[in-house]
Every structure is written in C-alpha cells, then in structure tokens.
Length: 79
Image (tube, rainbow, N blue to C red; front, side):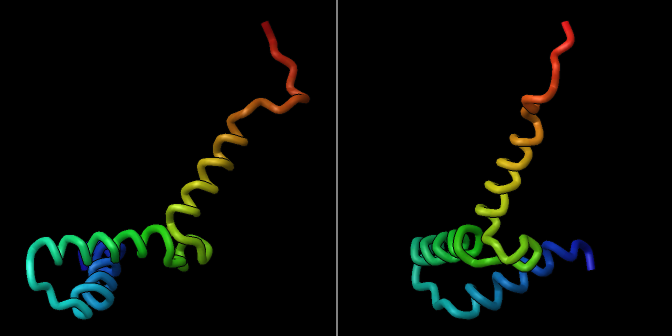
C-alpha cells in the first residue's frame, strides 16, 4: 500500500466509473469521466468531509479561514 487516499480513490473510480461504462471512442471516455469527476467532487457527499461534497466543504473552510483572519471589532490597533 503506497498511499491510502489514492488507492481508495482509484478503487472508487474503477468501481463507479470504469466498470460501469463501455467506451466506444476516446471522446466518449473523456466525456463520461468528466461527468463522473464533476459528480464526485461537486455532488456526492464524502464521509471525510462531514458528509458534504468536497467543493462545499472547501468553500466553508475558506469562509471560516477568512473570518478568523479578520480582526475583531474589539481589537485595538497599536500604531
């Protein structure tokens, strides 16, 4: 086992996309894989992201990080 995250992803990709599709052309393969990737990253909830899709989880993380970086109104600036 080299990298658990990659091996887990490869298993899901193989089981949910490659084993379910019969690609007739390279364009068909690209289209089907792009659709699966979009669903995987933007729609499907992930257990490691608190049952949120990765894009939604990242958006919430960026918002929280931005809120933490802003000075609070109670903070006094020192010149």
